[in-house]
Structures are given as C-alpha cells and as structure tokens.
Length: 398
Figure 1: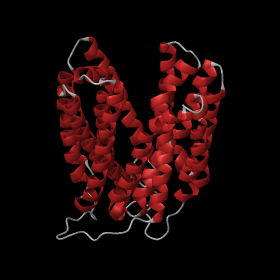
Figure 2: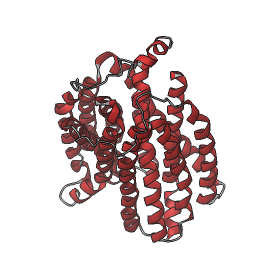
Figure 3: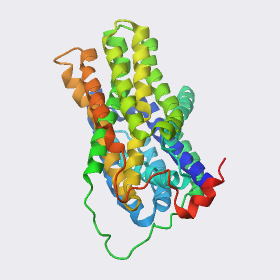
Figure 4: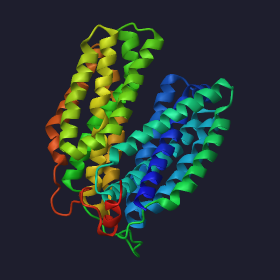
C-alpha cells in the first residue's frame, strides 16, 4: 500500500509540473494572442501568483480537515481543467482572469500534494520528499518537449491544453485510488478549532521566502545575465538556466540519501553555502564557461533545501500538516515572485551581476538559520518513525 501511495504521489507531482510547464512553454504565443505588451504581461503574472497564494491557504486547512487523499484529486481536477483558460484568452482582461483561476488551482494542488507527501514520508520511515520535487521538474521537462513539438506543428495553445488536460485527468483518475488514507484524518462536525501558527513554522516560511526568491532569480535573470553582461550568444545564454535546472533536478534525486545520512540541517546549511559560492562565482567571473559552472553550482546547492522546509513543516504536527505546509509554501511562493521586483529596481543602482550578490547574502542567512530544522520538540513527528499502522509494511520495502 505504501509503495502504491508513493507512486501515486509521484504521479501528482509530475502532473503538476507538466501542467505548469505547458503554460510556461506557451507564454510567448499566449501573450501575442491576448495582445498585451511585456510590461502588462508582467503585471498579469502577479495574478497567477496571487491566485496560487490564495489556493494554498484554502487547500491547507481542507487537507487537514478532510484528508489530503480527498483534496489532492479535487485540486488536480481544478488545476488541469483550468489550464485551458489562458489558451482561450484574447484580451488582457480575459488573460488576467484565466491566470488568477489557474493560479488558484495550482496553489491548491501544490499544498495538498505536499501535505500528502508528508504522510507518505512518515509512513515510509525515511526521507523521500526531495524525490517528489525532482519528479515535478521532470514533468516540466516533459511539457517542454511536448509543447515544442505541438508548437512546431502549428497547434493553437487551446488545442494543446485540451489534449494535456485529457491526459492528466486520466493520470489523476488512475493515481487517486492509491493515495494514502491516514487514520487521523477525520471529517468533524462543526468548526475546526483554530491553532496559532508556531514561531518555528514562520521561521521555516521565512527561510522558504529567501531560498525560493533565490531560485526565482535564477529562473528570471540567469539567461539575461549571460546575454547582457557577458555578451553570450542567445543559444549559449540559454544554457545558464538549462544548467541550473538540470542541477536542481539531479540534486533533488540525490538529496534524500544525503539527508538520510547527514540530516536536513546539514543539507540546508551546506547546500545554502554551496549556493552562495555558486552565485558569487557566476556574478564576478568575466568568463562564460565559469559563469555556467557558477549557475550549475547554484542549482546544486539550492536543490535539496526547499523540500526539507516543507517536510519539516509537515512533520512539526501532522494533524495540522496542511496548514503548516501552506504557510511555508505560500510565503516561499511570494518570495519567488519577489525576485524580479527586487533585482529589477536594484539594477538602476548597480550592474545586474553585482545585484546578484544580494542573493548570496540571503543564502548566507539560510546557512546561519538552518538549525531551525532540528528537532521541533513535543508533538513533532519524524519521517524516521513510521506510523504504527504502516510500520510492518514499511519494513517490507526493498
């Protein structure tokens, strides 16, 4: 049962990565179809982020109240069916409404599947969170391949999105029955008692903001760094993000074993330190190959950090795992959106590459604050201690 639940969780992470990857691949076409300029489109993207933040805050409590295994399929249905809306938008107003809706569906799925991942990790009795996030990246890569092919065929975004929706709905229907039903997930009558969010959760959320902001800077500025600062050709500049993304994916596939041996504090502390070194190298070198090496090192360092924050939040108190993950993911997501708003204005004062040094400072703050991932005290659950109802099954895994 646990293996099936783990595979089902992989499926939903891949599904979410695929859906959002399809959106990203079609951004230029959708922007042109809606008739908006780059500046307006940048503002519309804030609606995508705002919708996601609201979705996260809604889905977290629902996952705790009704069980993540119920909320994940509904969220997947929302996320996949709402994908088609941006492909139909023919005006800025319609695109804004579509992005707000898609963001809401994405936020619901993001938090609920991470809350379910916490349950599976607890049942497994060992750290497996980073692998789920790696599969999300794999889903995005698959979307890039599919989207590139359909664009080369001249397909309209709405047609491709409709096909993607159909495929992902089938995948969700197949995976949903295998989701883990935890005994503590009760449907209670009457209002659920509210609990004040612990300081530790807000500290984890603050770390998520800094680290996901750093990740967002790589997404938004790495290619521009090589093309505008180092005068790299467009094809070469694209490798800046490509090397970062590949390093993130590979790092996340390997992180769980590293966490199992050295613990999450070490992964966040030394990972953030490696990321700081990487961004400094990328910022200060005048040579393109060394800059690419810096972006790669930056990706390796960041790769295992954020999944550990989600895992720590969920295991602090499994009864409120959805709410706590929503706090960490929500603030982290806002951090990712804040990257362009921080670096952009800063470039009016210093060169783009020197603005990246601020990100190195954020990484160093994470190095100093990594100890917050240590034992949470009373009520904290650890993935190394599987739930009693699953302990026997966990010992039978290979």
